[in-house]
Length: 557
Image (cartoon, rainbow, N blue to C red; front, side, top):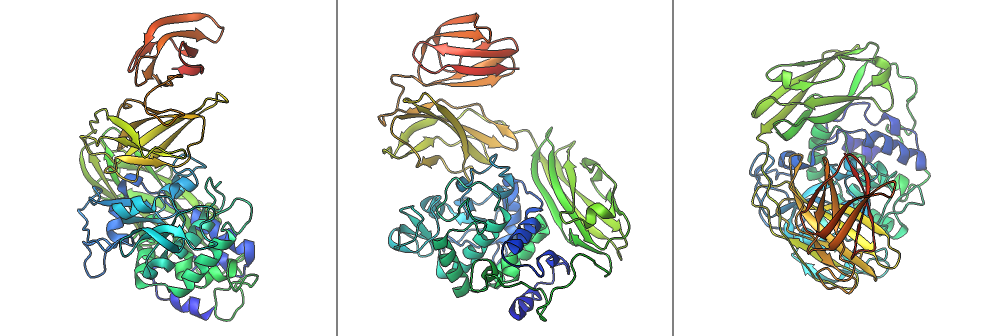
C-alpha cells in the first residue's frame, strides 16, 4: 500500500490514528469499518452550507471564486450564508434516492458536505436526479455537464444519465464510494446505481463505471484541499481521497485482499494501544459555524469527541467572548466513552439572546494529552423572518408519468421551498402525502416523475427560512386525466392547528360533517371553502364531505 501511504502523507491534517480501525481488514469488514468511521460526524445546518462552501469549494488562485464542477461559468461568493445567485446546493448523489430530509434519519446524508457541491443552476436542473453515466446522445451539453440517453448497459433502468467532464469523473466516483459506505444502511427508493440487497451497495454496472472513472482521473489537489476543509467543519474525511486505491479492495481488482495502513503489509494491533494518548477528533482548528439563527430559536450541533489511549477523563470548557450563548450538557467526558469506537457525541447548543455575530471557544484538555485542543464556535443571530403566503401556479409539462409543479417566488428571502404533495389513488382509495424541498430559495418549480394512471395529485408550497414556514399556499390539483383543477372527487388538504383545523382547496367543496370518534355529529358545514378555519376542542375527529369519497382523520391539540 505504498502509493496510498505516500498520498496520505500529503495531508498533514489527518490525525495519526484516524484510520486505525481500517487496518488489517478486507471485504465487508473493511466496508463496515469505513461506514462506522465516517458516519460519526458533525451534522451541519443545510441553510448554512454557503458558509462552508466558501472554504471547501473556492478556487486556489482566487478564494472569492466558486469552483463549479457543473459548468465553466464564473461565480463569486457573496459572504455569509446568502448563497450565490444562479447556483444551487447540489446533492451529487440525489437526495430523492433515499427520500432526503426526514426519511431513514436522512438528515445526515441531506447535509453531508462530502457529497454536496455548489452547482450552476441550469446544469443542476438539467441533471435532475438522473444517475451518472456516459451519454450517447445529449439533450443538454454546456461543455462540462452532459445529460442525455445512456450508452448500452448503463442507466440502471433510467433512460437519462448525467455525465460530468473528464477532469471531474474521479471526483464524482470517489464521492459515490464514500456515500455507498457511509450510508449503506439507508433504504434506497431509487436503485439506478445502488441496491438494498448486497453489502457492496453499488450495482454491477455502476461499479464498473465508477472504478473506471476513479482509475482514469487521479486524486487532485482540489480534492485533497477540500477533504481537509471538510474535516475542519464536519469532523470526518473521505477515505477514498486519502487512499486512492482503497476502492479496489471493496469493488475493484483487489477484492478479498487485506488492506494495511503500513508499507510492510502487516496489521498493527488495533485492539491494544500502548502509544501516547491521542485526540483523533476534533482536531486543532476545527470550526463549528452555526450559521444564521433567528432570535428566539436555538440550534444544536453534535461534535464527536474521539480519542485513543486516553488515560484520564477529558475536561471541557466554554470560554471567551460570547460563551454564555453556547452551552454543553457536561464538563467532562470519561476516557472509556472517548476511547470507544464511536466516540462521545457532545451536543453544543447555541441560544442567542441578542441580534449580532457571536463567537466562543470550546477547550478540550487533560485525558493524558500533551497540551489541549480548541474548537472555534461561530454563529449569527438575526431577526425573526416575516414570510408571506406564496401563490402556487398550475402544473406544466403534464404527461402520463409526471408533471412540473410551479409557484411564484417569495417576496422575502427564503432558504428553500417546501412542496407538499398528496397522491389520491381513485381505484384503491389510498392517500399518500409527502414533502419535497428545493435546493435553494431561487428555484420556483419542482418536477415529479412518478405519476401513475388513476391518480389525482395535489400540491401546495411554503417558504422556509431559519426554522419558520410560511402559511400554505393555495392548492393546485392535477387530476387523473392530467387536467388541472378539481373535478369529480374535489380532493382537499386538511391541516391541523392549535385548537382548530385549516382547510386548503382550490374551490369550494360543498357540505361537510365533522364526527367525533364515537360517531357523533359534532359540526355540520354548508359549504367547505379554501382557508376555512374550523375551531374544535382537543380530540380526534373524522371530516367527511359530500364531494370526496375519502374521510380525513385529524387530531386537534
